[in-house]
Image (tube, rainbow, N blue to C red; front, side, top):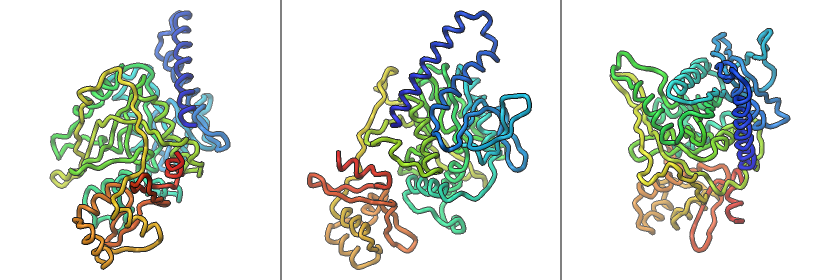
Length: 429
């Protein structure tokens, strides 16, 4: 379903762009910025209205966001909200409490250097008016799933957070904020012509805002501050925070926080929006289709927290596109499959799937390690990398999944999460 809707939205966008161009040819003096800006904001609103579900009191409006302290955002082109807001007298704009806002969309006709910086600044103001609050049960599920997919461990108790290293602490706070902050999207129609130029534009902006003096820090450039999605034409920059795209952490402790794609940008938007709505309202995962073919991304920015003269910040590295990448490269797709297991990994998984417990200090675990001549550290690290098992503070091995399925296919062992039915679909296929 999601692919069908994304294709429909893309076709709608293209048709509306043709209508705009025809209108500009036929009408004199349509170059005034207010008129042109209104045309493209109206076009974006029409597209967004086709992306939301009925029966959930969702609306697409323009206006401003306010919090309980009466801090208020700047003018917002489009926002997806839930429920009634307060209409600003004698206008078509509304003011909404930030708790009612699902997504914030900044619309740009031409996303160039200046518009990119302006959009970033406006999105940063959204994050600055966020208030600490308790998560709902469904929000906690979303936070837990994103945390587990990133760190390959269960969410620690907040009171115990000080016992963990800086990376885990910062990821905890960042992913928690990502969960409760509205989706932030920069919607460009034209501007940067290629994925390569869009990446370069964002990299140059980051380079211009690197802190070089610990006493005079340039704030607002943590990965949390980045918009969730920036796109123009057929190119996107995508935040990888587990909502929905699963983060990866490399061996040096870098989090791949931003990737790029030349796939349909509206597909990425729907993935992000619908993931939030599916958790919020318990919508069936059937809306995402079989989900057995996933779009490939190009690695772009990786980051890790650092301590500098007693202050905490983020260190970034950017990665160039592959040498063989062509500007007209077709979007890449990858066939999904569950983690392939060795025989001893399979035995552990099946044991845990049957509601048994196992401790790494137990006799049965030591015998397994000895029988298969394994290095215990390497064995546990490989299981952790497959995002299936973690070891708790008591050395108990536990499943990271909610509904794990283990199978044997063509003499090989596999296991994966089946909460959304994807393992079942993979086996049937």
